[in-house]
Amino acid sequence: MRPLDTTKPPYVARVEKIDEDDKSNVNVRVRLFYRLEESKGVKRMLFHGEKELFLSDRYDVQSAHTIEGKCIVHSFKNFTKLGNVAAEDYFCRFDYKAAPGAFIPERVTVRNPSVEREDRDI
Image (cartoon, rainbow, N blue to C red):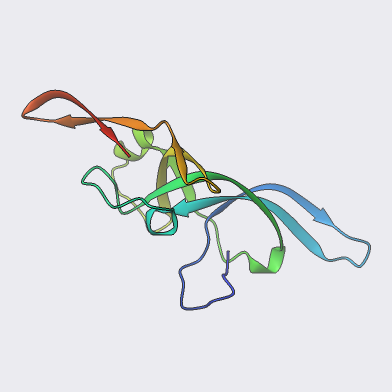
């Protein structure tokens, strides 16, 4: 979705509902995804991917005209199975509570060849 500030990247959102009002304006109700740099107090860790998004608890209603295109947000497991990652491919493995800046789950298991299993806080 096109942001008001054109120097920022497009918003990524999941369309929840499409409505048309009595003046034939088409609006979409969306649930927003956040990029790491848009989330509160989180620094990039080695396990964060450049194409990683966080599904937030924020909803918005926008004109359908703000939609710039379609992308696909995969589960992490399905993303790792992609043979060719396209520009419109992203992945999500965390939910994000925008107001407090909290993630669900709070920890993630990271596979490290030198360690059997390592849990990391996000």
